Length: 290
Image (cartoon, rainbow, N blue to C red; front, side, top):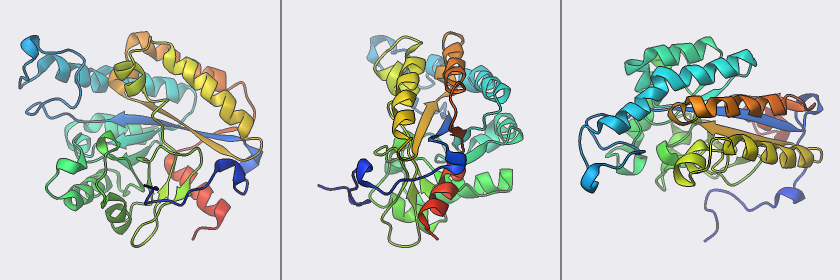
C-alpha cells in the first residue's frame, strides 16, 4: 500500500531547494542518548547469555550501554566541540533525572534536545502512548527551559496514531521516516508535522551491530554518501544525517574514524552543519510553509 503519511514525489522532479549562502548540503549529526532500565531485559545485547537464557540484571550488556554515558559520550562531544559542530541529541527524557551531567553538557555546547521517548522502550508496548509523549516533552522542558521541537521514536517505532499525537502535542518535526534526502510535510489530522531526513545507512547500529562491519565502515560509508549528495546538491539541496550512539561510536577503536568524517567534509565549500530545528526552519522558509 502507498505511504499513508506523505504524497509520492520523485526527488529529481521537485522544485529545487536552496540552502543559505548557496550551500549544497546540510549535514546534521545525531547523538542518540538512551537509558536502559536495569530491572528489565536490555534494549540491545552485544554479548549472548550462556545457555541462551534471559537474565535480569543483565550486567555485561547494561555495562556496555553505561560505558557510553560514562566514557563514549564525552569522546563524541570532544570531537564535535573541537570542530565547532553542534549536534542534535535524540534524548530519552529520563536522562534529565538520572544522568543530568550529560544533558547539561549537551546544552552547554549549544546542542539541540530532541524527544526520544521517556526511556528506551518502543511506543507500541506502552499502555498510554500520549502520556509517554507528554511526559517526555514536559521533562525536557523542565530541565532545559525549552520544549523539544523534534521527535524520534525509540527504535524509530511508531503506532498508526503517533504522527497525529505528536502534532497535537506540539512536536514540529519527526525523524522516524527514513525515506528521503529532503524534508517533506507529513499528513496529520491537525496541525503540521515535517519529516526531517534521518538515516538507517549512516547509523552505527545497523553498520556495526547488525552488519558487523569493521570500525572504519562508518567513515568510509559517510565519505561515499557525502560525495553523491554533494554532487546532487548542486541542482537541489540535500540533507545528510550521521547517526551515532555513545556506546558504539564512542569506543576507542571507532572514535578516530568518527573524527575523520568531519576532516573529510571540511575540505568542501558549500557545506553547512545544522541541527534538526535549523533544518526545519530553513525548509519552512524555503517552501513557504506557515
